[in-house]
Image (cartoon, rainbow, N blue to C red; front, side, top):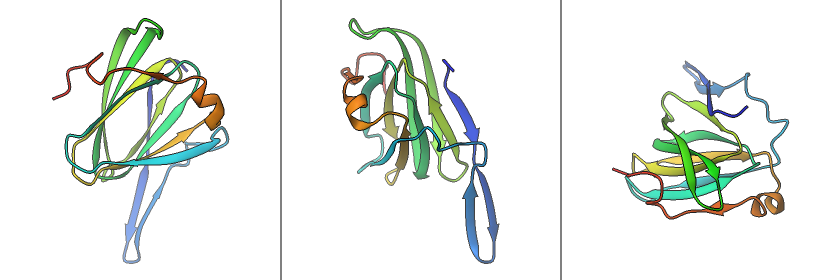
Length: 141
């Protein structure tokens, strides 16, 4: 896979509460997970990229804008394609981010939180980690 992909998450509601599920998403390749919470609306966390690591992003709470940049040359910060996604916990999708992309996040609600699943160990991820200035690839609004 070399392009980002969205997988829908189903929600079942009844008098007992709510059940969210995604039978099309497999955790078999996941080696770790972590969450990111934002303190304020429009807060930006950008850019982190990986040549190899694949990440899957799930909105736990609120709304988060995810911007992905296909990076052709990580050492010289040469981007090609840009993708924008809005992940909303009220109508959730899982966003699959393959290796070869830099990602940036912007909270679009004060309470936004995302969960990230990675197919790389922490040590492998650190050896495949590229950081760029938040204004490098994209004009955040």
